[in-house]
Image 1: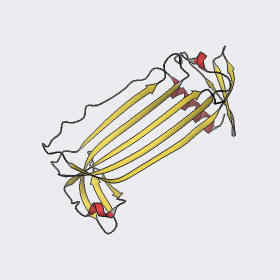
Image 2: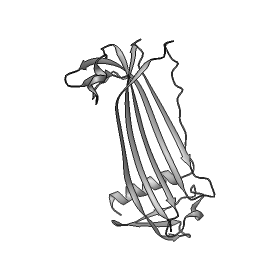
Image 3: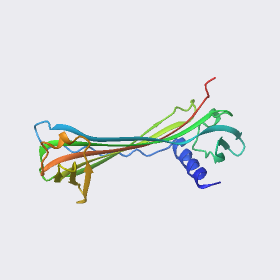
Length: 202
């Protein structure tokens, strides 16, 4: 089995399992009474098709599923944690996707010296009587201080809670007209991996 097949098998193993721990941290309390004005500065959203293929063989005794696409075959052994194994049929379609999104918002409020980082993990899965599907999503929200603004180059440098300074490019230069050092920026990182086994459309 090549590296790509191994990666896909691990992704499917992770996604199709029915037992996950969900971790969520409480959002910090609002430190200001006035609602901040938010200006969208940049949004990046990418979706990748990691794997797409068909179920060509199922060995119920060993719980081994063989998948096939144009690049060849790969096998996956379903552990006992995959309780809806019997819902998988020969000819079913397998899809594994990955999505990455980054949204940057300029918050028009003076810095109070507080920078924060909040991480949230959520899991959505199929019911016991349905074909296996799972989505694992992670979201990280960082509040950082603006430490430098270069309007000519459309750049904003921000310092996060760890003290690291990051420089980002703002798509719309007009948004920088009223942005100043000492204000804050909110950066939201979102990523999700989803896998599903579905009955092909006839």
